[in-house]
Image 1 (tube, rainbow, N blue to C red):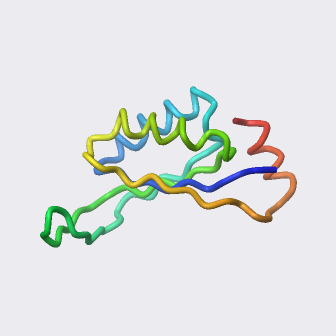
Image 2: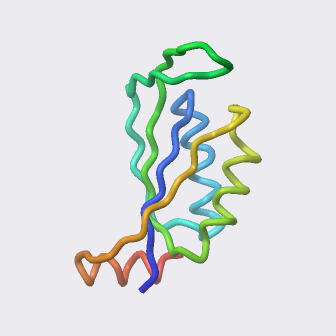
Image 3: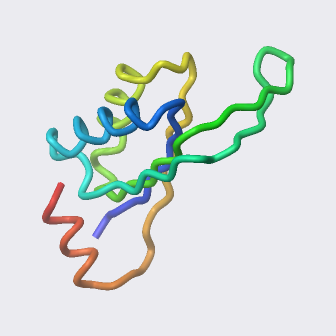
Length: 103
């Protein structure tokens, strides 16, 4: 199986939920975890910034990654949203079968 875990952040829970719903409806992800209340510190345009964000972690098939990036870039309010993936090397076989069959 070629599965991955994706990671992104959003400025609001509503924006995160709307994007996740689109990804689910489009069959691009099997599930997502929304974790509001993340405090992010980062450099943007040469200045250290601080923001409260909603972290989103989702499970998908690796073949969907480019499509997911396009959906998030299109719907995201950030100029340069973080969208990254890491391959799943091992896991509960039943869960991995479910992810593969769900997207």
